[in-house]
Amino acid sequence: MVSLLLAIIYIAFISLGLPDSLLGAAWPTLHGELGVPLSFAGLITMIISGGTIVSSLLSDKLTRKLGTGLVTACSVLLTAAALLGFSVSDRLWMLCLWAIPYGLGAGAIDAALNNYVAIHYAARHMSWLHCMWGVGTTISPYIMSAALGGGHGWQSGYRTVSVIQFILTAFLFFSLPLWKKQAAQSPDTPRVPRAKNVFAIRGVTAVLICFFGYCALESTAGLWASSYLVAVRGVDETTAARFASLFYIGITLGRFLCGFVADRIGDRTLIRVGLAVILVGILCVGLPLGSDALALGGLIVIGLGCAPIYPSVIHSTPRNFGAENSQSIVGIQMASAYIGSTFMPPLFGALTEILPIGIYPLYLAVFAVLMIVMSEKLNRLVKG
Image 1 (cartoon, rainbow, N blue to C red):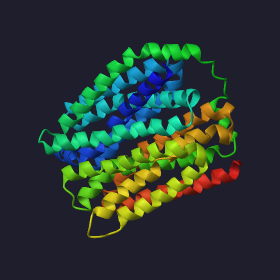
Image 2: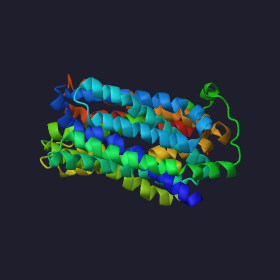
Image 3: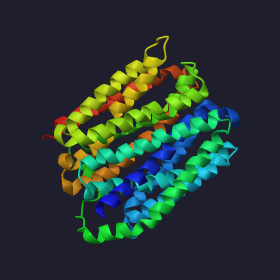
């Protein structure tokens, strides 16, 4: 029963990743059809991320009242409906409206499942769980690329992913008895201090800034990769949508591999290696060479570097701050991460109105350096 439930959780994280890379893959075509500036992608992602922040902050109350299984199923249902709404939208305001349930569904499931796995399963499953998210984010650009290449339009890409989400929703509702059995067999979780008290703990501010920087980099890299390839590298829109998924392939492959070595290498080393690899990947993307091969390969390298950071930061929280504080701190970490993904991609979009989109690698490098500084500060403040 435990193994079956774990498989269901993995499937749920695939469904969480499916919508995340759709907008970036579709936007080079979508913004032209709607007649809006390239930078307006940031407006939509900001609304989505805003809903994600709200629902993640409410997830603790929702999970305690409804249970993790029901929160997960309802969240996937909400995102499925939002994606269907995207597929029938022909105005920017309609996309913005459907972005609200889009974000509300994503935040609740993300917070609930991360906490559930941290409590009930071994550390290696955290890397593999986020690998499943990467599977979803890798699949969806190919779906969008096939829709664009086949002449069916970006609406067909959104419609296809919506249908997949509705199927996963039905599967999750059928699995609810398994969640109830697992809850009945699990001991009560210990009481933890309120979130307002944890800011006095040494290193908390550093880890929050580090998490902010990570999600700022990851979300900006994923959203604007296609547009960068089209505008700077001269890649056609269909090919750009396909190759933008290389970033997510790197994340997915990296997290799969990290699951085998995480317990042996340790979180701190994994984070350091990941940050070094990110810098190498950014350099590859930014070098002004005639061939596109290095830039396309650089997207994979950036993804490989990103792979261990998110799960390793979450997994190291009990060791760094004490198990009695970890639940509160993980929740704040995720809120900080969503703030990064909410405001930094739109900021990049705004910058492209006055600066060339070729600043994309430099913008990513700023957040990579910020993460290096904050993670090393955390290591100095937290011994062991």
